[in-house]
Length: 408
Image 1: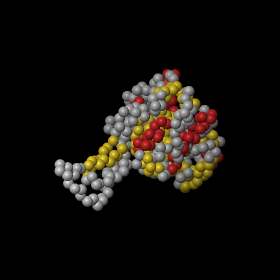
Image 2 (image 1 turned 180 degrees about the vertical axis):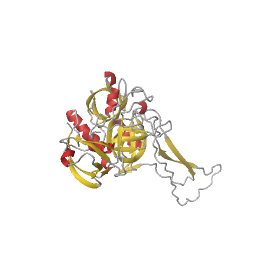
Image 3 (image 1 turned 45 degrees about the vertical axis):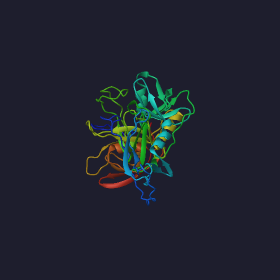
Image 4 (image 1 turned 120 degrees about the vertical axis):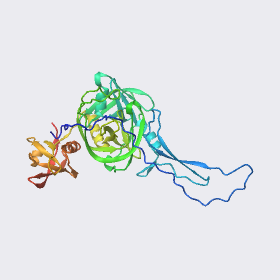
């Protein structure tokens, strides 16, 4: 397997689709906090008037579908005397910002669009006020099947035709341009390298054609490597996502953000934002365990990767990728890693001294547990970047520094 090309996946692999749309990743419920105060002097009693009871509601926001007309919420209610003071509603708190879920949603929704075509639909995120939009490559391919014209639908209900600026199947990213528009609300970009497991996030997009939908959750894990597509789809897919039995192209993505915010077909290309409403990922895939009752897990491409790719697509219409020059397979022994099956002549790997039979155990500070990890990590590096590779040869551990070159 070539370290640049996607790795073949077996049964039960990652998929943009999944057997069953996952349930919403809800915010943890926060019960109302009662702050005790000394009771005030009893007021004079008036005939026919008694002290009533007051319902104090604390709202814990769960998965929401805004724009589709459905709002999901969990309400916790307690009954106390009128002198009791309730705690404030749940809020996002990060980097000095204090925004409620609703405020984050209102801030970000104008920057998220629905992408429609003759045979597909998905989501996208506005990059500029004159119509540049970031989305997934598989959304553009799906919407453009059959030579149909793409269009985008904005949060205010207006639509515009769209054309492709550039695509990058290797990272499943693409940039399109909405034609004849101005004054759009561009998304505020965050820093995906600053994310922590447990950070609160919102996913915004058009799942199953329900534009402007919002779901809430947390960052479940970071730096995941996944292979999406490549399998023979035999499921009944939602409208616009191909026919049963249609094969999709495999793509290996490294450094992915895992979230429990519900992501369904149509969310692809949409926004994953942090507590301050900053874009930190592009939703791209779902993993399920199979079976009708399986729960889906969502994944997003980090915005730092998406920014690097989109800037190249906008400036030149294409993307350069780093090249290591090895074919790898999963290790079968007791030590996890990626076994080098072949080294390309004249490649950065050969120049650094790597050989067939070496077992790669670490790239930089990232442990390698399979061949996919090598593919995903290399795709996240830049041309000319120096990377330390740890490997085993004849039972001994060694390190080499590889200067990555451009994939020809």
